[in-house]
Image 1 (cartoon, rainbow, N blue to C red):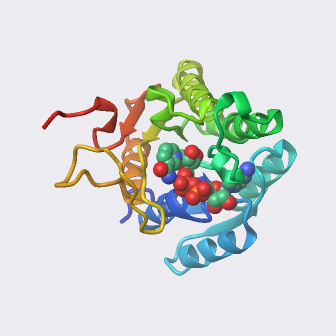
Image 2: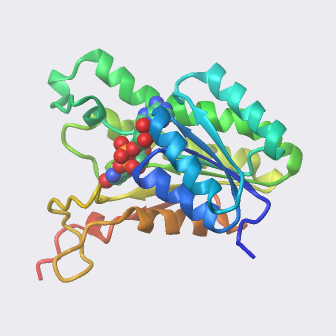
Length: 249
Ligand SMILES: NC(=O)c1ccc[n+]([C@@H]2O[C@H](COP(=O)([O-])OP(=O)(O)OC[C@H]3O[C@@H](n4cnc5c(N)ncnc54)[C@H](O)[C@@H]3O)[C@@H](O)[C@H]2O)c1
């Protein structure tokens, strides 16, 4: 028996790294998965891994900024699985996605728009697309992947920090509206998470040398929240204590 048997989870940006780890973790616990990602090859390989676990998986190759396509794919998922029970808004990132991290004064307006759109509008599009079905079923979980940048700020990422803070604001306001339908809306804010084994200075307070986070640390927290019925409108920071500041130890 898995914790999410019979549920369907849609994870955006599930082609690799954190999103993929979250998708695999839900699949291991019995959920059907809608794998939404821009990258077709990565989407298909995540779907294959999930199908091999014996649960249903649907490839949704799509840009979360494309509202019509998201609406279409969510409607397809409703036909196939009866609707999305759990939405994880994970697709996102900073100007680093375009290789364009700069101080704000030098940022191109198009890059700022891109960062705001992918994080904010992407999450709005997906939440909007799944919500009516959740309301009908009187059950749902929406989990936004924000960032400690929203809480602490981060140089060369003014647009990103603001967009991630917007995702926290969205979770709080929406939680107030949809609590009456037993829908919980929360955020998880990662600190520095290792990608493909890299490990630049992470300034955390866990482990002998302040270990970086792993995608599993985020997936564990997302699954925890998806399993709770009395936590809503919250932001859980998962950063190994980094946002506590220096320890002077
Ligand atoms: N890695 C970190 O240290 C860290 C820290 C804090 C927050 N986060 C947040 O966690 C989330 C995942 O981070 P990651 O490091 O795994 O990212 P990543 O860049 O490694 O992977 C992101 C995935 O999302 C997909 N994607 C990007 N834009 C998309 C779009 N418009 N539509 C659909 N799919 C899209 C990409 O194809 C990719 O598969 C992001 O929202 C990021 O901002 C990451």
